Length: 345
Image (cartoon, rainbow, N blue to C red; front, top):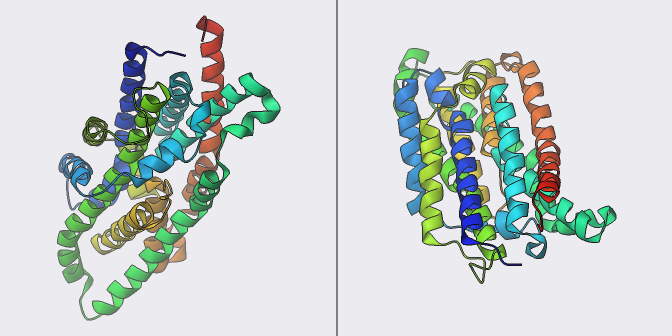
């Protein structure tokens, strides 16, 4: 089936809209700690985060993009309409969770919407009993494992860093410690923003490249330079727009942070994300939100287990669990609606 350039262009714009929403939805990951510890004002924090979100374009490759675009769903069952329906699923779930201030994963919303739309397409072609034929089992196994493993890595690494900080600075009084760590937090926040940019912008790159392959505008899965630059630019612009509801949950409601604990949380999250994205093969699409929330809980629990508001953490956990199935359901419904109202689809 031939797909017009206008249709493909429209879907690319929707993908970039998701990228923008991802930026403001996940801005809290990069700046919640640095705002809550008052190292930077909210305005300068988002400027700082956006700059380093974009700077990742010059530092890393496209391994995550390839996993998302071609490692989760069989490309033979992907059409531009499937991708559009998947994006609708992801954007819908992102906006719902943003409204309620829940730091869920934009990455998993994208994967869920993409999978749900592909499954609906296969169900229409081969029958609903074959809908799971759309999915690549190995890609999903790794992703589902990392839903649990990623926040645990952030949690444990943040705890270890806090122990190391307390031991190394055992002869310093808290006020003197905070003086040093307020400066160090600028570095750790920048590292987290770089990791967020390279991890999350690549997911949009993967989806756009899949659109170009499925519409025959590309003959093989290789991310074009213009797609790379556009994805990083738009996610940085989204970060500039804020996301204050989620910043409040991550930076204030989950646990009380100080510059030293903020530094440990950001450093732990950045190391975890960069390791998964660039030293694992295939590169699993790790959730920046999950890792950062786990790291914040880790630094809170090392001070005092009750310092973490576990009721808030439980709400966040259930939102994580629901993200993939909920966005998949919206993706499935969206493709069904497209078939009902668009003749000859």
